[in-house]
Length: 234
Image (spheres, one colour):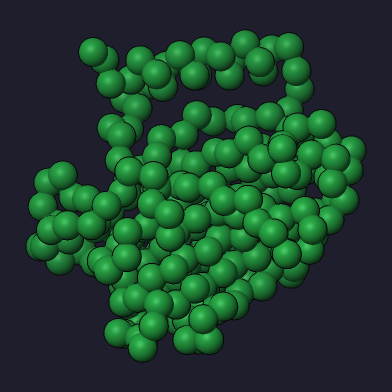
C-alpha cells in the first residue's frame, strides 16, 4: 500500500475546497519581531520556571534563548527547519532546566481572538520536538479555550511519537519540521474570546520549537503527525 495515499487524497480534497471557497486568514505569526510577540504569554503551571523563549537564529545553539542543536552522532538532529525559522521562532529548551523535582507544565498562550464572525476555524503551525522522559503524545499538546482558560479542548500534534533509543526509527524525535493542522471550529467558531496555547508536560526533555502559526477559515496545507513518512518532493 502506498504510504502517501491518504495524504494525496487529502491534498486533492483541499484543492477542491479551495476552488469553491476562499480562505480567510484571521491571524498569523511567523515570530519575526525579534521577541515574543505582543499578546503571547509564557508560563509554567507547575511553578518550575521552565519557560518558552524566543530564538532569533536556529543555528545559534544553546544560548540567547535558543536550544541545543543535538547534531551529535547519537541524535543526528539539525537546526529547526520551519519555513521561516531563520527570522525567529518560539522554543522550549527543556534540557537547560535539568532534572526538575517535578514535571514542568510549560505553556505558551496567545489571545484572545475575536472569532465571533467565523463559521469555521482551522489552526496550522510547524514544529519540531524531541522527548526523553515523558511521552509527548498526550503531554506535548495544542489547546483551545472559549471561556477565558477555565476549560481547554486538547489536540495532539504528535500522536505517534514515543520514547526509546535514538536509533532508526528515531522515535524520540519528530520530523523537522512537523506540519500540524487542526479543525477547532467546535470550540472557536462564533466565539469572541478564544485563547490558544501550546502546553508541554515534561522533565529534562530535549526541545520543542514552534513557528509559522496561522488561524484561518480553511486549511491550506495537509500535515503529517511527525512519525509518518513525509510527502515526496514535487
